[in-house]
Amino acid sequence: MLLIGPPGAGKGTQAKLLQRHFHVPHISSGDLLRAAVQQQSAVGIEAQSFMQRGELVPDGLLIHVVEERLSQPDCSNGFILDGFPRTIAQAETLRTLLGRLHTSLDNVTSIKVPQKELIRRLSGRRQCPECGSAYHVELDPPKKAELCDKCGSKLIQREDDHEATIVARLNVYERETAPLLEYYRKSNILHEVGGVGNQNDIYQDILGRVGA
Ligand code: AMP
Image (cartoon, rainbow, N blue to C red; front, side, top):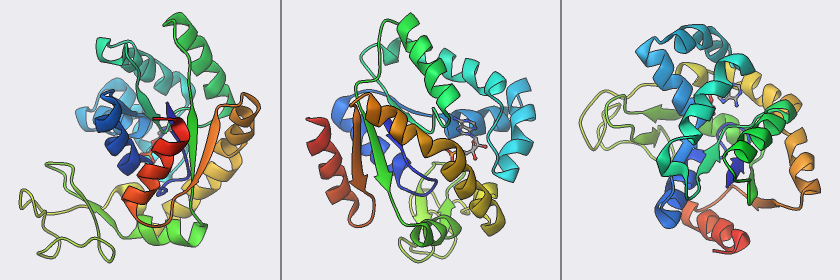
């Protein structure tokens, strides 16, 4: 299964809920790249500057990271992809790659959220660098300002969640990724859900549409 949506649409949040329901791994290309940056691997060092600018990382860097992850045994019963593919060329590569692994995408869910709301969500987003818990300064603040409720660490803002980079990322989405909706609509595997409102309602909507 694949989740598509602009940055801030809630793909990561929904993927975590769906992962528990389907007992399959959540594979986020952004998380894989951030881990590579943190480890300062060869891929991470090259990817870092593209990510800081909110631009797409070149396919040559990313695709083997995704391929390696999808080839792990825990993906043999399925997976929830989030953030990859982001271009038509990547979608074609994914199709070939999944063919080699004797599988294919069974459904694609697009999560739609108006741009103004995306900017509000992304600019207020904070995360715990230790345990990964997510917060929002207005919508879901921690109990003690800037500290994680679960482990007490100081919360951070993702470098690409600053306003200028947010606008760049949204523009990249419209230009490069939105055409994928038509691509998957033609294959009859696209579902579209609204991403504004209660997280659990959105989750139930997705489950209803993917026939779970
Ligand atoms: P995300 O966490 O999905 O918002 O991704 C963060 C950043 O990682 C993006 O702004 C891109 O720089 C990079 N990235 C993630 N997925 C891809 C992809 N499929 N293609 C190219 N770059 C990507």
